[in-house]
Image (cartoon, rainbow, N blue to C red; front, side, top):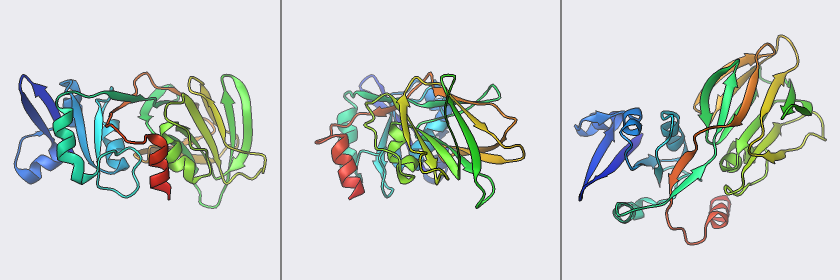
Amino acid sequence: MLIYQIECVGRGTEIFVDEDLALQIGRPGTSVADMERQKVDFIVSVGGDGTILRTIHKMVDPAPILGINMGTLGFLVDVEPKDAIETLKRLLSGFDVDERSRLKLLLNGVCLPCATNEIAFLTASPAKMIEFEIIVDGSLMEDFRADGVIIATATGSTAYAMSAGGPIVDPRVDAIVLVPMAPFKLSSRPWVIPGDSVIEVRLKLPGKEALVVVDGQSSTTISSKDKVIISKAETPARFVKVAARDGFYAKVKSKLT
């Protein structure tokens, strides 16, 4: 993982280096959490979407992130390596920030890491379906048997949720996407609901367990005894805006063709 933190100080630029990288280049290291506490200007993440998601998970109130693409697909990374130096020079004189809603996950009243892309509920037993009950704003939305269900942000609609058959949602739309995974009922379809909805996910059958995976970064196991509540997080993910020629739709076209 390559992460740099750049903070403008007077006319100069102070650079903080992630601890893992610092060991390799012989410089003092700074944790991502310390970078956040110092309220530095932005983080440069060199890698793919997974690198960005891991970095965000280390912060409570995420600092803006600029992604330099060293991965494969990458919807969160905006800068190609050949353009990195010129982009950084330009951004040091000022930049705008794109805020993206995250999802808060409460498990039995305890807050787990927030999700930038999605919260996935997956069967803990291969080839065994789970019976879900989805409550939205106090009303039963749907109950179904499936291999799992993905609850995604608009940002995450182009990630795991899309692979499972969900819709692509423009990140400017304040929405949450729910996608059943291989549901038994043909009538169980993806849903797009308001971004301020409060969602409760219940497992109906005693003795059945599910894995809850947040952004592919952290996981825990739940059963029918657990209470799971999902809502919009108080703090968003933040991304440094890079002047794009054609915007989100061109990015989708270029990434998926």
